[in-house]
Each structure stands twice: as C-alpha cells, then as structure tokens.
Amino acid sequence: MGYVGAMNTALPHVAIIGGGPAGLAAAEVVAGAGTARVTVYDAMPSVGRKLLMAGRGGLNLTHSEPLERFLGRYGAARPRLEGPIRTFAPSDLRDWATGLGQDTFVGSSGRVFPTSFKASPLLRAWLARLDGLGVSFAPRHRWTGWTDDGELAFATPAGALAVRADATILALGGASWPRLGSDGAWVDILRRRGVRVGALVPANSGFDVAWSATMRERFAGEPLKGLAVSFGEVTVRGEAVVTATGIEGGAIYALSGRLREALAGGEAAVLQIDLKPDLSAETLAERLARARPGESLSNRLRKAAGLTPVAIGLLRECAGPDIPRDPFALAGRIKAVPLPLTGVRPLERAISSAGGLAFDDLDARFMIERLPGVFAAGEMLDWEAPTGGYLLQGCWATGIAAGRGALAWLETSGRLAGPGTGP
Image 1 (cartoon, rainbow, N blue to C red):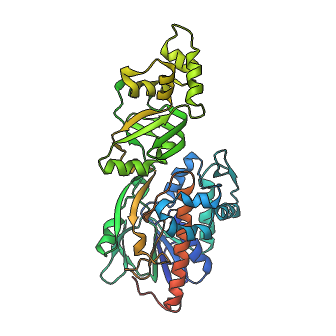
Image 2: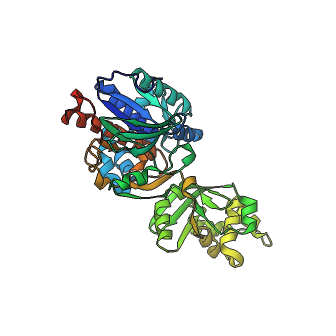
Image 3: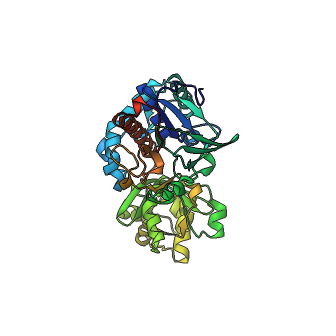
C-alpha cells in the first residue's frame, strides 16, 4: 500500500484520521474524485480492526427491512442521519459490496451478511481498491490535536510529527473496545477547541444482575431463546444470554438506551421477560393444568410449558420461594418474569457507544462549524442504533457524507487550486 507522500503533492491534501468503516468510506469518496491526495492515519498497526472483530459474528452489514422502518431505528438522530442514509441506502451498501466481489444474502431475521460470512475478504478487497485510487496509509500515527501553527499533530514510533492538511475528516469512533483503537481520547481534544461533545456511554451493552451463586454457577453462558423482553411501553422479541455478571444479547441491546437512562436517573430498571411469547396465558395455563398429580415443578415446567433448564432457573431466581403452583398464576409469572437490573456493563465491553460530538455543532456538510475544514463521521457523532446492521450502515453513510462535504468545501474555499492552510 501507499504511504505518506506517495501521491502528487500538487494536489490538495485531505487527512482522514481513523481507519474504520467511516474513515475508509470517506477516503474512497475523496480519492475517487481525483482532485485531492488522501492519507488515512490510524493509531493501530493496521486499519479496520473493529470491522474484523464484527466479522467474527458473520459481519452484519445492514438490514433488509423497508427503508422507513429502517430509518426509525435511529431515534432522535434520524433527522440528521436520514439524508446520508437515503443517499447511501442499505441497497447501495449491498451493491458496493458486490462491486468488491463480495456478494451478500439476507438471513432469516432480515439481516444482511456477506456470503463468505467473514469480514477479512471484504476488507482486503476494499483496501486494494483504495490503494488503486492512490490512498496512502499511515499506521501507528496517534492523533494528538493541532500544533500552534494549525497543523495536525501525531505521536508516532519515530517521534512527534506535524502534518499540514487542506481538509481533515475525523472518524475516530466511540470508546467501546479501546484495544481495537476506539478509546475516546479525541473527546478532550475537541472540547478544548470549544466543540460540544457529550459523555461517551455504553450502547448495545449488557447489564448487571445480582444473581444467586446457583444461577451464576449453573447457567452463565446459557442462551435464553424466543423471548419477549419489555421495559416501559417497549417490547422486543429476540434472544438473551445469562452471563456471570448479568444478562446481554440482542433483545437486551435493543432496550439498552432506555435502561441506561433509567439507571443513570436513579430509577428502577426492571425487565419484564415473557418466556413463552407465542402462547397466550390461557393456553399456557391449560397445559400446566394437565400435568400429572405429584409431578415435580421442574418437570411440569419442562413438559407442559416447554421451558429450558436456564429458563426454569430464571423463573425460580426471580420468583424466589413464592413461585406459584396454581396453573393460572404460574402461567402469568412465566409471561412476565421481573428481572431487576443493578447496573450497566463497562463501556469497554459494550458493542458501541452513545454520546459524542453534537450534531448541532456540524453543518449540513458534516463540517464542525468551529473548525472550518474539519469534518466528522461515524460513531464519534452523537447517535446510537441497535444491532442488526444499523451501526455499520450509519458509519458508511456518514463517512460518505463527510467525504462529499470535504470535497465541496475544498471547491468552494478555492483550495483545489492551492496549498493547504490547515484548520
């Protein structure tokens, strides 16, 4: 791959800081225009590390549901993300992957995956395309802010480095999985420049539960399948996993924002878990009533209600010694198991983070208004979305939007014709 200085230095220089999906998408847009030279700087020894980690689960690129429903997954951030996602929609992401020789398919849940079910072939093909476009890569370059002269400052194995850029795109991620490069160190850098940045907090995270020793020792790692999980007025169908410290999984992640806010506000965060959402309470009670006299409660729950050992364990854990024997009362408890949560799992263990750079500090081109010529994209912006392909789609779409914004700014500011001036 190319390295710093490998391109035509007569062209304006666009520095992209962060080599995740948002940064690489921005690099492709800018380099593809052919009017600027592009360097991707990353603190890690190689780019795309979090993408490769996501690929361990099959690399859920996006989702196939109708676009209106898809956009609704972004909650309060929808007004700012709708334009970029409509411009680069889930279908466009699938076409883009196909263009790299990585066909996709729609899984039974509507999620979209590469047919290889891996991230590495897609990343290799993408980096080869970027290399062909002349993109340079500078690994082991940790961004530390700006020099007094307005140049980008980096800490490198060879020492401090200052780089002049005509435009800069920040795609530094949030603060989940810091060992992969997203450690949130950029927060203080931007705050010192007067940019509003909300605290980074866990999103799509697990939660702590005060399990008994029996529950923890017998069932940690066991999946709870086919659940309906409710908090407040919101109910989510899906799966969860009992952990040694609490509970996690897709159904929990979908509620994590509401649960996190409740706990932060000192409210009780009690999940209501329906262990048999496909059966009405009446049908379940009828089945329980047909149990043989003298049959143990565990056998009754296993045979009549179809509960797995971990589901029975959860029911016992939450009901304690007061677990009802009456069929109708027992059916009601199976349909609404109350699980109190005691805390949020640490940010470094979350799938993603919420909080970040305020959208109100960005213009329509994704440029930070206090820092002309500096753009931002990806997870470092203040938005969150559930798992299911929404996170990666948002990163790709905002990376493309920032890349196009940088090109437009270079043109309107006259920098396409002259040397860089820095932020």
